[in-house]
Image: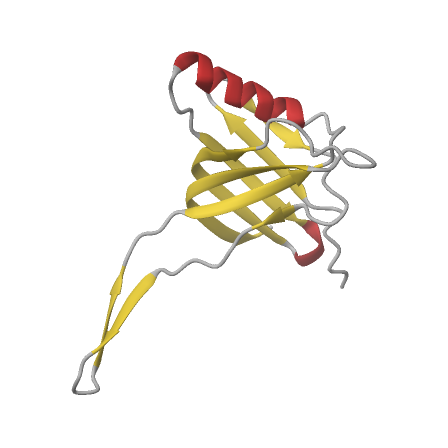
Length: 142
């Protein structure tokens, strides 16, 4: 089995701007996406040595890194500009398909929480990073 991320497929839709899911393309050379660990439970240890725990609901941030010349930068530019014009937040939905491991992840009710307005300018233009914070990420076999 291959663990390549090269055949990952990410599709996103934003109902008001892009009602049809758009395939995100031309990822960064080193990173396609990143999803940090979340803390879904709070734990407290009592002074008597007994532990208690409770479920808490947490948002799930996912960043996506695109090459400076990716046509999918237009997706994020359009989404951001539409929100700026309307002074509103437009929710997204999406899916990440990881063919190499036979998994898909359904992304539910996302908000654009970080937007890189232009690529870093170095010897060559660097990747642009976007972060979408999701209400839920639902894993399944593909």
